[in-house]
Image (tube, rainbow, N blue to C red; front, side):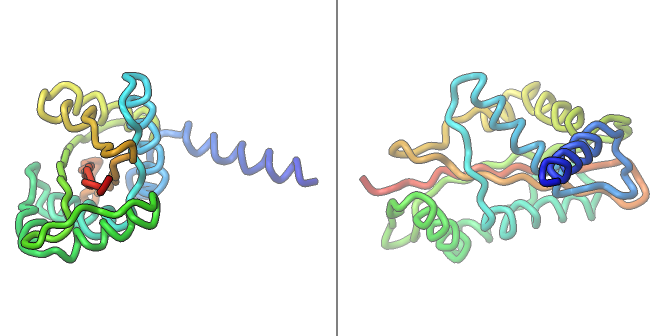
Length: 192
């Protein structure tokens, strides 16, 4: 019986990944999971360190950035300056998360708080009659065609042999097939 339940779960999971996307019922969590896994697969294939998902980065930065561009239906990078530089709150949260995950203290500056570096990729696409896996491939391929985005997507974010943090989010413009995808990447500078 246990094997039947497991097989049923696996079958339904693979069927959902193979079906064309219904943008009126877009499975945001499934797409984000597939997209992040494909990013790390790409990074492995080019012998670059893989990234670790950051819930703090996701909630505090990536979701907010994608929400802004989706609401405005406009492709750009909303200003991170106020959130990132003027306030140490988000950096403190990311630092705490990193320290819990890896057991290594974050370097701190007396003036700026936790030392880290953030970068961002934002994508806009539409009218894709594809599966979630195919859409993830389209997004990653689009980033690879832009030198700046390619550099961020393939960059090294590890520090002292501990991985960098990242997250991705997606927004769908209501009543359309227009999507926005955002990635944020963070290098946490750690103490030796």
